[in-house]
Structures are given as structure tokens and as C-alpha cells.
Length: 270
Image (cartoon, rainbow, N blue to C red):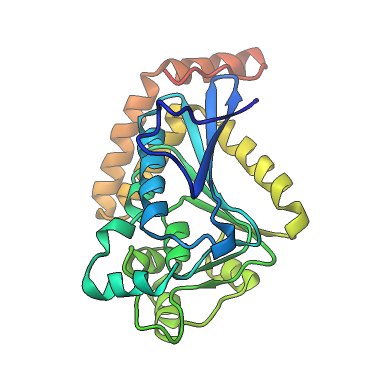
């Protein structure tokens, strides 16, 4: 069952994105779709405000188990919306267009569905997710050649953590466009599928993520993302602490009971 976010939940009207939910047995998952397809789903200040508001709603929604972020039309998100946006970067008015941090901070898994090119700020948004599935028509570049700008929404920090410093510098210094197969090879995306199979493959991946216990999925994400900034010993300590928390949940007991009873688990997120 699909339903759109209610007006009472959003602090502002949405003109450049759509936020929809899909109900599942123990909650729901959400899809945030960039809908400014006539302008390449460019993230201007207005769209950025809407994205941040949608992240706020999702982050406060304890029943939400997963967020999917995708574009509409033939692109995920490319470039800057206007010369004014470039002037805003040069003059330092960047805060109004930053969106990556709020997406990366969400406690639930975030799946980025790359229906087309992710260029510049669009790639920086994609880097803030946890998993990336790409159409064979998608391409990726960290900045836009010929424009006086550089990554400023986390691209120079998240990309090397994902693909390593050598590949990150390759993209950052040349501005070249990376194709989907190369993106898969260097670890920029997790899966590449034909365009006509993207929806079905996304549905399959969503099902795989939702098969896990909700608390386990959140804690696994927290362990991996926070552990990246810790020493190995500190990371192992965090893993041990969160594992103890998981063992005290009802979902853990339900997982054991369902395994013994040879039946599907009925997780409640408690």
C-alpha cells in the first residue's frame, strides 16, 4: 500500500521532491524522489530545504525501516540549477544547499537508486547513502568540468572512504565521468543492472534489507559508520557494546524462536 507523507508531518510544502511510504508487516519504508526532472533534478536551495525536511521526518519516524532515494526522469541529479547557485558557492552561501550530512545521519539504512547520471552535488548526495544500485545508463563525476567549483558537500571526504584515496583523487583532479561498470569495479556502487530491470532489482534489494530485524539493521549501520572513524580496538569495543544491546531485545528472542520453530520471524522493532 502506497501513501504520501501527510501535510501535518512536513514543515514546508514539497515542490521539488516527493516522499511516499510503503507499508510492511512491522512498519513501513519510505521513498524520497527528486522530481525537478526538467532541470536535471539539480539541488538548489529550495530542493535542499525539502530534502532536509524529509530527512527530519524520516529520522523521527520510529516505524520507518528504510529510506530509498532516487531521481525522476532520465537522471538522478546533475549539476547546479543556475548561475546564481554557482555565485552562491563563490560567495560562501553554501549552508542553504547542503544536504548530505542530514541524509548520512539517518539511523535507518539508506538505499540510493541511481536511475541516471549523478554529477557534482548529485554524486555528493548519493555518497551519503549506505547502498547504491545503478542503472547501466548512469555515469558519475565529482565535479563539473569548466565550472569554477569543487566538491563542498562532503564529496572529498566520503568518496575516498568509499573507493580509496587514489580513485578519489583520480575523479577529483580530472573531473572525468566514470561509467557504471568502472563504478562497480572501484566500489562506488554496489550493483549495476539494465535500466529496464532497475525497479525489479530495487524491490529485491529492499526485500533483502527489510528481512533483517529492524534494530539489528540500525545497529549494524551504526557500528560500520561510526567504526570508520575509530581505531580497530575502539571499533571492536563499539561492536561488542551494541551486540549486548541487541541481545536484550525482543526481536533477538523472536529470531531464535522462529529459527527453532522453522517459521518466518515476526519482528516488531522492540
